[in-house]
Length: 444
Image (cartoon, rainbow, N blue to C red; front, side):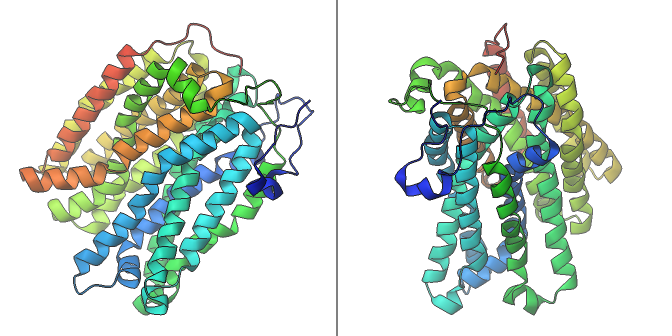
């Protein structure tokens, strides 16, 4: 059998030791393997959380300005460049995972991600190295975004393929669970360091600690990923054509509709978990401590609910009916959520409404991943999922906070975030209704 890892010369040292797995794949998706596979996606969200938490400090250290707003804006923009690199990463790394195997792709991706985190963690500040410091920081963010573009496609494809189809929902649900855990741990790290360290210590070295801790677990993930069973042997896979060309020629409808399907889930995630505290403090002038309870609730549910959503998905013969019900239910909750906060109702009411919405969102997201995975054949699956997710998150999730902030300023209406989410929900619901679900599920 031809090796599943035939890497380009630039990465031959990293991937060359990987040899085709001869043992059967079935029933070997152990907890250790599942953690290693979803580690990259979790670290991506963890990095987002800690960077957002320390964005003010990063702005002052790397983009000093007499205007604090300009420093913060440049720091946020630097984080945003990572989103811009995701589509390129999905094209290159998704194709790599389709041509050389999931294991080789995931190992390469985590290696690139580790290099990006290292650049961010140890970047010299502007005061230490002048313009070189911000350039190193930006390079780290670009590399992190590039690697993240291929992570979801390669890892989620492995999760689907690493066992029989009767439990693929449970395996795929680990991707969502990793996001909830990362968001919680990132927020806890930021809050803990801010509480126990002095402001001077935070500026001097404290802000680097979360990134260094994230970097420290990378070697473990790399080791486990290098020894995972291969789920996509590529001896018979066509090597001449890039997967993106095949996707556009043969699966264009699924590709475009998939991007629109991502719109609702990614805008809800980034606005409810990451934007809601800023909205409640800056727009509604509520206490910061109160506002973070909403993000905490959403993150906790994202940690717990996907496991049960995966079990539910495995019992259902079709994905569209449950997704349609969740889309409609979530759509009906958007207005009451923001109205309850705006009208000063007890916070418990808003939290309860958001909890119901997040339960629906997580059930829908697990089913959505399965719907997309089952739509693309194995030979282009990693590329298909990578492109759908990377482009969808970049266009709709990455710019969600910017869009809502701009709309709030332009309209002066506090309910603008609700209208924005309602619009995104209708677009995704229309894409779902237009989706042609396969009648027969693929074995892999």
